[in-house]
Image (cartoon, rainbow, N blue to C red; front, side):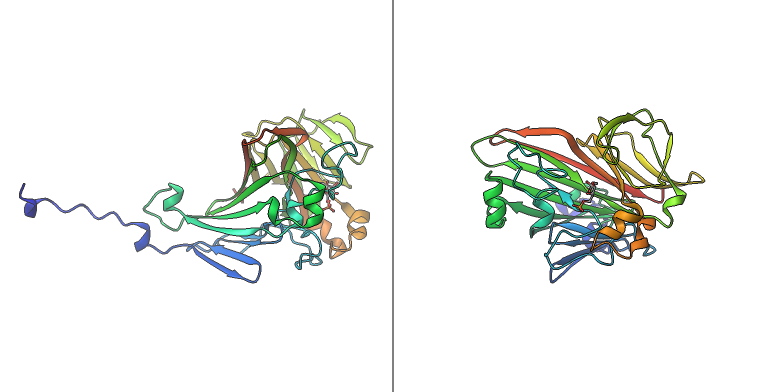
Length: 321
Ligand code: TA6
């Protein structure tokens, strides 16, 4: 066939002709930004997202001014990763010797690499509309103390995906050993708000919750729009992950919307005045007015992962809808 007359393919701009996301690494921080200005920063300690900014530069996450960034303690703010146990570990459990909220937020992870829009299977015409950062943690990377406290061969891959309209964080848990283990997991998101008295949390009505400020007694949410007027520490259970939890202003403008995959519990936490003062890394004391934790997790019970199996779950947070 005479190929000289074959029409040339119509040029479809590929990602390589368009401005691409940038990813930089300095010390223990990985920063990714989109050509349109959105950015995300992840600290290798805990693979903790410490900043998420929209295109206009506004910060969406709360990071305490007293947060330790030197690995001396979990980072107070952003999105700490809670694994393999949520809260203080039960005494009669394999996690009993671990610290509160487990070791994932308390260990250095490794940066595994980035993927941009094209490899994310998104619209190729806009190479810069998303970037995914992957982080890994495995048993051999843990401190001797943690390895001894929880002697299971595991692998974690934590993916942070920044797009123009959302921040997505998901965790894959692999059981690389020869015996099953139980785990809990939670993404401890500290959302930044201008004024805690002017926000409401929606889509919790009629849901069952355990109230940790009332001796872990069980209650049913009666409010269609929960206001935060005191120390609040509630574990809402068995929610449909597809139904967004919405943080709205008091005149009902949506500020954040959180949907989940395989995470059916939501923790709502604000330390309020006394607890804020009582945390040495929570600063300034008044900052409880500028944060609300809405935490997607699987924490009401335990997931069992058999040898060789894997589990995946995650959240997508949309801001300023
Ligand atoms: O997610 C809510 C919670 O379990 C609260 O009870 C409070 O302890 C908060 O986590 C912070 O825990 P941390 O260990 O980071 O001080």
